Length: 177
Image: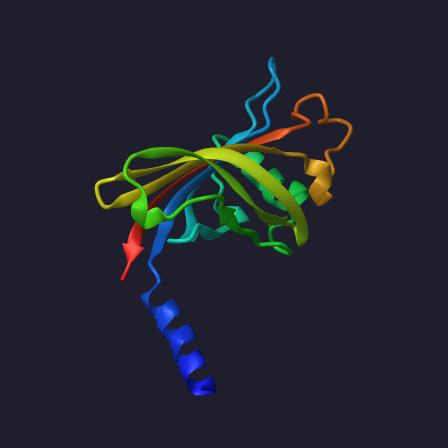
């Protein structure tokens, strides 16, 4: 009986539909009007999405690209400590979804745990999930506070960097066979 249960669990994980990307886009904006735009884009986010809506993603902090090289250097060395904390991760789920039954576009809520600089923060975000041909597109936007992840903004820069950072994701999944 125990062997049968183990076999069923293995079969379920082997045959469960999964969708994958290594080219997901994650961007952020922390700009304040009248100052240099503080924004960057990471085009190499890896993410996996199961048919039942479980989602996990990971990106390398140093892969964010800024318009100015000096801004990128300050971001990695002074704010994010990317040598010590090279990755950011998210683990959670898309509520009320069966990806294989998706036909068009659907408004969704994503819940889970965001980990930045080794600190976990529960979060919830609205978004949309769409089926376009054989691809699944997930788009969402949410706000994080630097202080929640022990990111200190020096007093000299506080007027130039927003108190709230807007994160935007755009993941294009293909079925993993």
